[in-house]
Image (cartoon, rainbow, N blue to C red):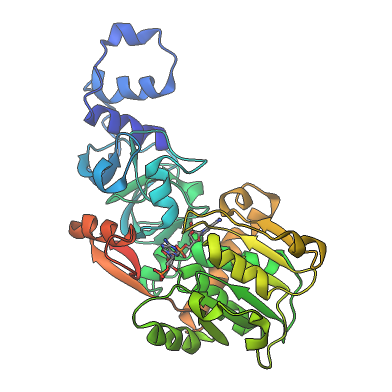
Length: 383
Ligand SMILES: NC(=O)c1ccc[n+]([C@@H]2O[C@H](COP(=O)([O-])OP(=O)(O)OC[C@H]3O[C@@H](n4cnc5c(N)ncnc54)[C@H](OP(=O)(O)O)[C@@H]3O)[C@@H](O)[C@H]2O)c1
């Protein structure tokens, strides 16, 4: 289905219209679609068309605040198993930014619509769709490119039905970050109640989820945040979520960070989404034989590991990438895990900071997500 939308995008971008005869021998499927939609104006009387969609589009890679624009994408015809979803909300995640910049290892072909997760309400169905009805709330699961637009058309297999009582900002954001937090806590060490973890980037959505998911299992968390004005308030907030200890990076400029820990065991597992000094601090807390899992590089600084960390502490360095996990056998569990996380949200056991922003303010939200306006809560576009 992505290809159909892509064809519409290409039409929008003034790709040269080929004559029907020149297309006759052309086997490329995109061009076949294109012929269908544009070279011939006749279509089956019963064709189900999507409404036109307003989309955040980029034609080439580059700084997101300069290469993205909001455009109208023409209607497309729904194939038999297609579902047209009216989007309700979608977040701006760091990886969305990296895809637009062109630095993410897997990214859609340009021109492309931004966004990778979100929630919407079913608008219309292809003739052979089963098990999904207009009005249902659905999320793309596994997540899928192109969620920053008012109508998304994808095959029925992409959509996972969720409870309509879910707050839209949580439904929109439940996959990329909370699922990452859950998997990282489960997959790298067998932690038991009373054990501890250490993490940097504790204010991120992943970080906030790690704190709460750990607390639910009786696992203590040591959290590192960036120095900032008002850091006491941030610490208080994270402690309310269940953080045991929260330190700014500068507080950890001491010879023996472990001496700061009272009644918390040395952690066997650490999470790093920052790099640079913040990664070194995670390593300093780890116990003999501990593991640091890197899943992000917000500071864009490399990780430096002392020789002694390997020789005398036998530390292990690992990495996690949700998109790779989604292609593994374990991904069969994805929807079950999403439902579990949404149930925690509904029970009030999982919460995180977000700001719902009207679609008309997309570029302000993007500025905030890019960090141009200082530390901000997660920006979630409301369509
Ligand atoms: N590997 C994977 O599969 C995977 C999956 C999901 C997320 N991630 C990664 O996880 C990280 C967090 O994502 P998120 O969506 O949860 O984040 P988020 O809620 O958008 O928050 C951004 C976080 O990055 C911090 N930050 C921003 N710029 C920074 C800088 N220059 N130096 C240090 N810290 C900086 C912010 O700290 P302040 O509060 O101090 O501003 C905040 O904690 C990102 O790196 C993302 O790419 C990876």
